[in-house]
Image (tube, rainbow over the protein chains, first blue to last red):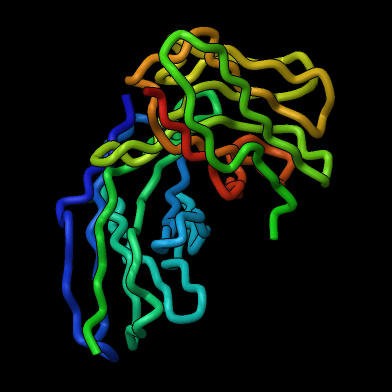
Length: 113
Length: 114
């Protein structure tokens, strides 16, 4: 069965610094996708970035990039030049069987001014 | 904006009462999902649908049923609510043609069972 581990329950980062949020996954599927979502205190789930297991290059979306290391089963989210508005919960998810996304427990990121 | 609404947004109910949550989408996407979110667990899939009248169970389906009689509506029913079903419930849709495309979420429903 697929599994996602986010080892950092919480992080404090100084504004304008880069942030790396860790995500490791376990899947036996040969082809899969990895997702990162942001959940601010207002509660909505916001899609950030996607990486396919066969994509040759790491995905990037604006200030977000995904440091994908397939052999290590790692898909860390990197946020460059952090902003106060980046304070939120961040969730990593991997495609599971039967249309499901398997989610990690999340990392709470707090950006300090 | 993914065009997804959920109703009600907040509900307080008593143990043993039936509860129905509604998810409505405006763009006729095929795949729809119900998740629950609890502290320390991320999101867990309850049920999903891959078309009208086509539904299947997710990881935590016990105590829940769903129905999809129209493309735009996906209903989640708690037949007899229990305190363990106190949670935040999210509906999601997949915009692309494949079930593995990115999921987009509604605003959530906060349910409290006393």
